[in-house]
Length: 250
Image (cartoon, rainbow, N blue to C red; front, side, top):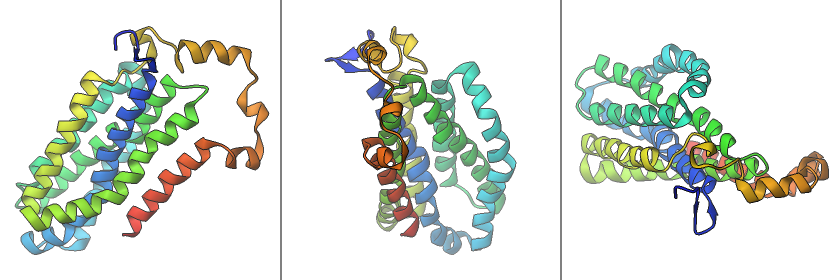
């Protein structure tokens, strides 16, 4: 993999797989799966629904918005890989600790930590990551990556509900937390590269980059609604969005 290719596969597609997993776990599983724990938290700890939703609201208000604005600057300075690693660690740690909460302030503090991890390991960093590796095929690569978010949104409510039924909510949330860190940290350490230059490549790979110079810009050939509807990129993004909406509706 050091030369950026494994069996002639451009290394950028490994980056797409990494982004897919990041969005599947840090966004799909956590963001859409966590509300399934609400009935258990209400029953076990006596929290109200309003208090549970308030925890994430405070996280988004006090951490999500400010950090979302600063994330792009941090990514430019230290790279998307480092930001995603920190975010994945925060998401996993907050979930594991959530399994031990007994008081409302424990929950609210961990919600803030979880939101911070979501911001760092979620869409912003992964969009930058994929964009750094792809130019000519950016839409297609982004569409594949975002399927992770959509599939996570569909799978997570069912998965979390099954874990709760079988192991109880505390063990279930701990399993989810360890799964996030167990998958995303190794992926971030051994697979993710912030920039193609790290492995001696250019965006889209040497072959794609050189051939791109010899052909007209695809946007000039296919423009307008008809061109968009006829592209693979459009349907990949639409599929990912549809799955997310389906996950919300469950």
